[in-house]
Image 1 (cartoon, rainbow, N blue to C red):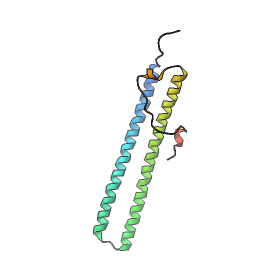
Image 2 (image 1 turned 30 degrees about the vertical axis):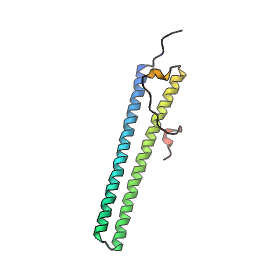
Image 3 (image 1 turned 30 degrees about the horizontal axis):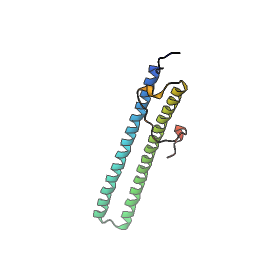
Image 4 (image 1 turned 90 degrees about the horizontal axis):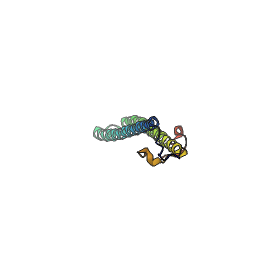
Length: 134
């Protein structure tokens, strides 16, 4: 028997590292975008509250402004949910790649410790990546 430990095929390992890097980067971008949207929404709500308080609008006009604001907020909330869903989907796909990779290493008798890095797995389900529940 060969006493040398098996080392993964370099292009395969590089490919896995690239996939991890890309999905990690995309996760970070989506999280930052989500945070920025939430901050913007908070600022706009505070500004509008100040304007409405200072304006002394008649109740009919105030109702129309409030309705318009609710419509805008509904749109922004929908966009935030969409971004969160995309983040969950990408995170799930990333974790699925790691699970498959680790299972293949085990299948071929390669200890995970020999990789030289530890894949980051976040908390997601094990269902198909396209079917993430939001």
